[in-house]
Length: 459
Image 1 (cartoon, rainbow, N blue to C red):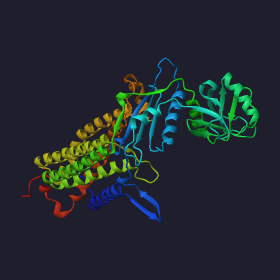
Image 2 (image 1 turned 90 degrees about the vertical axis):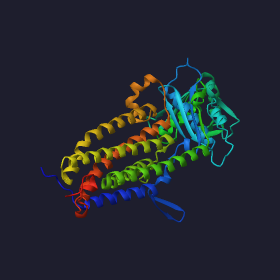
Image 3 (image 1 turned 135 degrees about the vertical axis):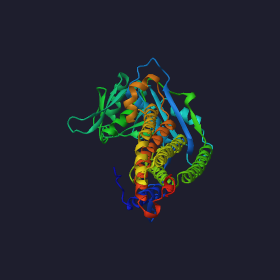
Image 4 (image 1 turned 180 degrees about the vertical axis):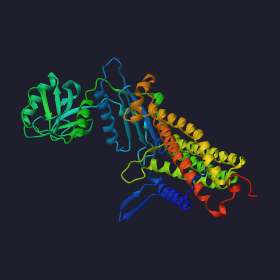
């Protein structure tokens, strides 16, 4: 059977596309209009680095009482406390996750900007302290009307049946009911400010005296805003305080992280260059094609991490995540080596250039697919086991992973993610792109020499 040839321009088209992807993925494309930055494609500089590189803290908070019935709403309220306090400290680049299954709050936040003596342990301790919720007259946080769980029973986000707008329904304790009835009778037409710690979180206007212990806060916005306000109010009446699991507390200095990043980037670049050189020496023209495919694989991985297209968010890249990229490059090398060795074997059987390339890729496909699918499964399990409850894969694997307890770790999740996307691009570049580039370039007359593909000289 005669092999199906690939047109000569295919190599140049694929090569140009890979170069374009590599350039834009590494350097990005942007423009400035005065001081306004317009991003067309994000580059490596737009990658969001994890706290193990930029420096910061990762802590796991748990309720200090195990005999209390803790609901999902309680965990959301506890999450709201921490988020509010982080913002109060001008820390906005944070990650907070509520693991409702295991009653834990996972917090990651970077070092405070321009602060060299940041006391991370003190900050973590302060984040978990019991929130002080108060309802006060006007904007005076010292003139308290209601306070904490002694006066406020619960806050529920709901919808006003008459207007269809999102509201928060307050239910007060018997003590709070009497205090609120007296205060609202005096403050009709005025505002009551709601405070968490030292931050005002809402300031609704009193429309009428409220004597039955049930109040409605209106003019909030959408359903998400109502849920957020209700969580913050409930946070002030939690039946527990949050304590830090010291065994899971990670504190990374910025200098340690940046040094580790520099070492890994330099080592990875040297290793990439040496690997490409060795493949070219060993496999000649196929080694050149394999090196181009590896460049495409690396560029594709960087693009998926940086949030390549404007408007998409960057994935948080950690040091284990970089290790995942490097490991996936190793898998890509293995893919190309297997195909090159199979092609050499086909030449030994007396095949022509076209026949050897076709048979070599065909015979290597099963081994490549098996190896890559194994890594895909491992990557998905890592992402499921160490991802948050908000992660789709974690939700699918939760029935199994719940047996082993909580294990949310951003560094390991990052490793699984980069390894997964690296393997996916390996299948695209190392299997498809390599095959079509090699079949295409082999049609160029002066390159139709078996020795360039691992065979013996003609004649």
